Each structure stands twice: as structure tokens, then as C-alpha cells.
Image (cartoon, rainbow, N blue to C red; front, side, top):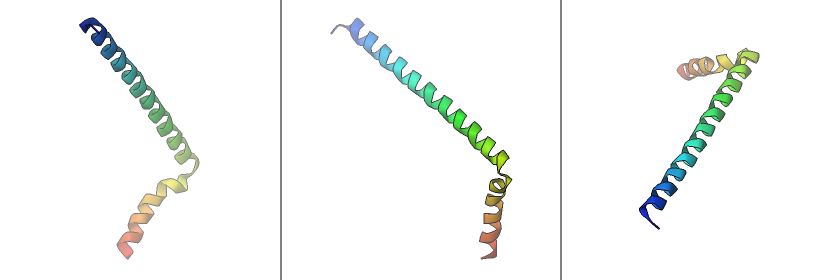
Length: 59
């Protein structure tokens, strides 16, 4: 395998990795958006962390 072939193979690997990372980033953004929508639909969930902190202090 010549240098040109090695370079081309490495380049293709980097491109594939970049595509995968971009896809993962898109999925994470979509999941964050869904969680935000869920929180808006259920205001009780937004209060839970504060209530947990209060309960921890009381104990």
C-alpha cells in the first residue's frame, strides 16, 4: 500500500468519524429539546431538585 493509499484511507476514516460525531451531536440536541418540552408540560419535575435539597438540609 502506497503513501497515497494510506493517506486516502486515513482521510476517509476521519470523515466517517466526523459524520458520527455530528450525528451524535444532533441526537443530543434533540434529546435536550424533548426534555425541555417535558419539563414545560410537567412543572412538578422542575421543582423536584429544589425539594430534594430542602429535604437533605432537614435531615
